[in-house]
Length: 349
Image (cartoon, rainbow, N blue to C red; front, side, top):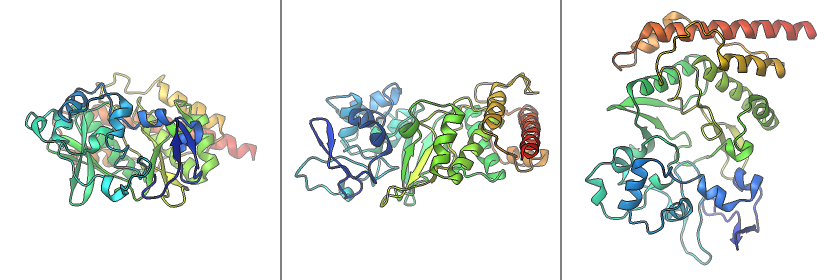
């Protein structure tokens, strides 16, 4: 189902009567029902995932059974499953509350004793302890992290905004970082890049896919990996970027706003390579823009902009000088490479 529209029937594990326009991209690519269900499941390696399944008295705790226990519903898209001859509607199965947010986020002991209730936590993916909370009619994703992880994610969000990029909306709250549901309660469908490219993280391969969708999607992809390069995001993978699709037509509208930057910058410690010499991410970005003959340039970035961003983040014991030197030196190296590439392209024209 997509909302209350039937988009496919599943009989004996096979898709039939398919509405190609609305079918999830992963199923268009593979036809693998079980694989699609599995990637919607909460990460079973998260400690609080095990607590959650036990508290909800799930008899079967495998990924597919877990997802189907809530009809495969998620916060960020309109897809779900129902049995033949069922009278269920999308309004009945979509999430309107979450009593198990505290259990999912930090293993709250009192939440363990709550009676069964449908919860979006069973389809809340990713390896970090996190939860969905409904506040003032909006869903927010709360995530745990160390001070350096929280700083890195929030700093990169503010830096992306300063550079004019499309960023998911983040803020810090009570020792956690939270991000606003950028689908606005599934008014559009989010689908990860994995749906189209599987595990292939190669920049050129991804760029060709994006370019085939639209020039705007390709441009946003370049901006995303440029910011990854600038802030040394080692953890960009095909599940933490993706597309927004029209729920009525299935059209890919845009790349989703940039999100999930907590394993970057200083999250794993302060780099000793402040000059960004022999930086692998810079080398990969240079190789990419040269291979695809792409003209790229950052918007102006100054020490004042970086200092203002850092001064607005109330997290203690951050080495401001280290962060500024690391980012600014990366900025100058990438700009130099981009300037050289632009001159080469213009000479070939």
